Amino acid sequence: MADSERLSAPGCWLACTSFSRSKKGILLFAEIILCLVILICFSASTSAYSSLLAIEMIFVAVLFVFYVCHLHSKISFISWPWTDFFRSLIAILYLITSIVVLVEGRGSSIFVAGVLGLLATLLFGYDAYITFPLKQQRHTASPTDPTNGP
Image (tube, rainbow, N blue to C red):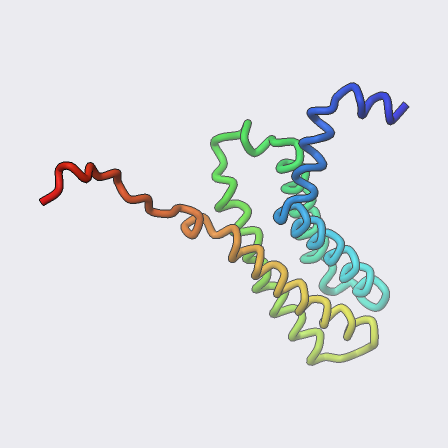
């Protein structure tokens, strides 16, 4: 039955798979998976830093769904590039949390979570770099008429 539903709405399926295979889709999916793995590592030993991970994972998953379903184009009162950029800035909190966890060094799962947190910091930093809204606005030169030259 799933195949018949998928074939009945090829436009929707194509839209979902096309974003999931894009650079931004792969990046968001990798962020969700990395947050989940770090959350599991923290839950194995302590729950002290789990709230930051859970909130970020939920926020990334919501944005992923918004982009996959093209809801970002239907909701125009939110500046989606800036929303995504500020979400990516959580990398600063990941960096602080990872450094604190690595300095404490209480166990192997905490150490793995700290190292993966540093990796997540790099991933979120790269995401912030490629989604920076002012970087995307490029100046285009106005057309000039070569016959009206000096």
